[in-house]
Length: 254
Length: 300
Image (cartoon, rainbow over all chains, first blue to last red; front, side, top):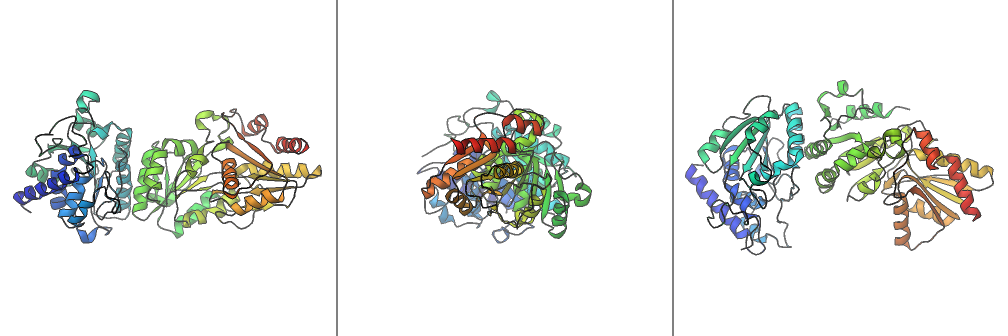
């Protein structure tokens, strides 16, 4: 898929997100910030197709920040993992698409919603792949605000100790917690230094630039024997100028 | 009889999906690392990461057996157990060390006396409380075979008595005395059996019900004990809230039963930290003290 095609795909995913933000709403800011990232990973990086969602040799992607599930559902629908028409069931009792990931939806590896959980779940998946000599990788998408949770750092210690170089931590660095800028509340910078100090190999890129994302994920692991961390600088609400970088536009019900 | 560790090793040999995990608590599994290689996973003092990783391993078809002290396992990692293991109902097995009075002189930080209450509150989670190492060893294959997540209130002390066949959800009853039934679990079975002997020497006909698993509980055994005796005693090293006493009360409520009861548990307080024998004496949980309380209740 060319970059032009990726851009068109990301635009369609954004449309899905905005539709899911009507009639009940969704966590739109965090969904829009990682839409490009998820589109890129599913189109160019992850070895997974609608036919291989249960294949033990597939690449895994676990969405730890949870709020951004409309971006995942939009991507999965565009790429044929789920029916596009199903997205209209968001928040309806005849289906099970709600504000956080539901693992019963094809392509969703695990449920989340409580922050700081899926790095540890990803570690378990990565440990098993190593034990069985598999070549597949485990990607886990963290929110930057989520990095306030102690279990992120506990998990990094363990992932580094176990040499999990099949683990790729992707941070959606949209600079916001729920209600306030991270740097105003609990500063996270310098983020790359922190992850490196915990034993990971770190790259930082523009999370809306497909060429930059190509570069970041071209060769994995970033270093043999270490977990990889790719910090993606993004804009919360990206694509909808009226809500971009607005602290009060975390959850929106249009 | 084989030990817990030997039995676990045999199970690992025959079932390649079993992995043994610990959050740097190796008391029960000290000899396993060289035998299990990569299937022995010590994550360090990180109970939450251990449980999350166990869920990830279970997603890949593994059966993780997680070891830690009962307090840190059920309290520190509670939300990970509830959310990552409980919601999907993954077959992760949790082995909590030094539960109840077994934390001896450690003090309240180590007193797991709400563990049953917490674990049984999680849908799908089973709770198994062996009375000694023989029972633990008999239970272990069933624990591994079960598709449920299971919390094991670990105790591997020497046998309190000879046991019958083991099944999760089946109690075993000792004697058929009609004056009093003592319902208990875990290492306190030993004290209950002592109390039974003392009571019978006094002419009080007693039976002891070792409930063995608190969830599922053997409701019929509880109901029989209530209906066939004049006094139903619950005897546990757990808070009065949420453990066996509460479970019996729930059964009574559901079935509209009444009985004369004597609940013996820890009510809204921690116990005195000391060596186990002294804890039992101080807290009134010896067989002798139990027999005295039962006699006093009967004579009221």
